Amino acid sequence: MTPIVFHPFICRSDNYGLLLHDPETGATASVDAPDAAAIASHLEARGWKLTHIFTTHHHQDHIEGNEALKQRFGCIIIGPRAEAAQIPAIDQSVSGGDQISWSGHTLSVLNCPGHTKGHIAFHLPSDQAVFAGDTLFSLGCGRVFEGTMDEMYRSVSQFGELPPDTRLFCGHEYTQSNARFALAVEPGNAALQQRAVEVDRLRAAGQMTCPSTTGQELATNPFLRTGSAEIRRALKLDSASDAEVFAELRRRKDTFK
Image (tube, rainbow, N blue to C red; front, side, top):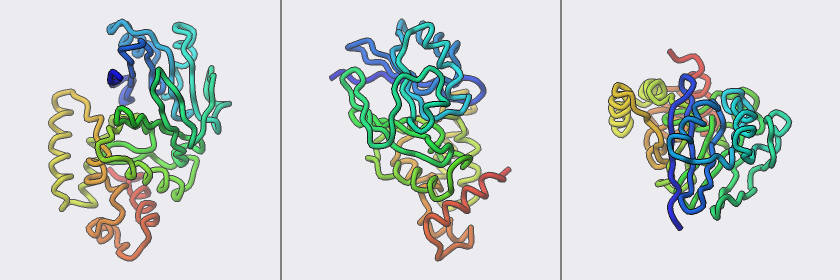
């Protein structure tokens, strides 16, 4: 089976667009639809036709292009069952535990409540990739808007259970600001120090910092490192549960400058 071609790009101000293309069948999917014009431009530049949209959640900067892209390409839109009423032009709704067959490939759906109540992610094990939306970012995680801290902790934690070579594609280019917070709570982490230097180099050159890998995130992302003694000391939560450490990290990140 020919490997899927991944084409990430930044659109709007800091959203990631992502196209998946199967060279054998010509099938092309967009993960979310933040900007119809930008997505169409990247499709046209490669001679691809959009066949599917995989929607992670209902926030406007992830669904704004749905209707325009469906009208233009006739694509099939797949999104979270719990938010189906909020996903424009949705054709198929799915929940965690479901599997999607796309162009001979199987994507597993992960339930990820927290950022929104019905947020989902898509795991493509055949090509070592996961599409996390706004649940997990490189060196960070999404804000908790609709769910609970405990839900978000469980949602984020499941990414750490994926194989370490799984490429993490997320919804936003937030890595540089996330690195500053991560270093504030775990400054002695050598892998994090190296990652922060690399992120600064990439952003200074106008380049993207994603995808990372789940292995890289386990080594550097504080929200996947709630067992770190250094982080626990920084938070004064030495004997707290992992979920309590996660919640305090998220609260501090909400107001971090």
